[in-house]
Length: 308
Image 1 (tube, helix red, strand yellow):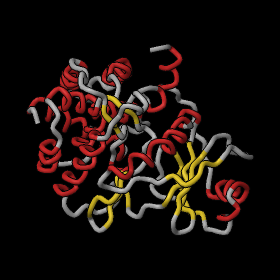
Image 2: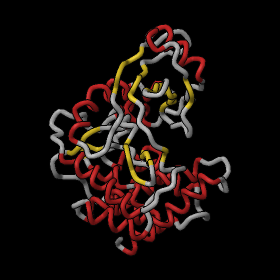
Image 3: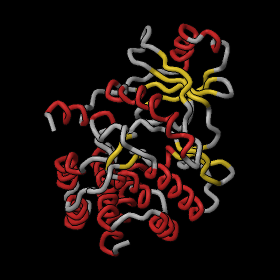
């Protein structure tokens, strides 16, 4: 990997902050047919993009930093082709906006998808949720990925090798010395690094997290945010198994995806990496986000040693 690729992956340039007034200005200037529609921020907001509801039937999504700009064209290119082959709705691109005024990057208009983030919505049956999510991923992985974008800077190497994050993971373990079971964490990490995906590359969502899963009436209804879309190793899409699901639903999720143990080990590696950097990067190690990451870390370690 070239040094500039690594620099892009670990770019920490501050994200841009903006509100509905900027979005209204962009819409009025480029899509005057929608200028009279209300613009309302969507909560909770994401990390890579800021999302706003536009009227009743659309949403506007704007990258929050330059490192996320590559995702705009990619979603517009691939989502229309993937959507008809998936069992759950995904965002439907409607238009691409241009840089203008105080906003320096391209941005998107999508059709609106009803539902609340699984972070805040009530999930009536996590076992059913796990079945539906596994069915979605199974269908995604079954789509011909011949022309899909391989893992790279555009999706922060989701679907690629975990080795990209080796130094960062080990640094996080060292920074948390005395706060976590470092030996156990490194054992999980080494097991994840011990294998690679040798089969035909498959489509990966790249960021299957609760915040990107929409729930309505207690059920999983849509999957959003395909900015990390790519083709490669499906292990990166398995982290939610330990980050959101529980014992029974975790078993259901695993049973519904015909993947070998080495792939699940790499999936644990992705979950471990995210938990470690979240804890190590927290200004307050007792914050809710850090506490949740500690819980994920404990779950991943227990899973590794219990082979579940």
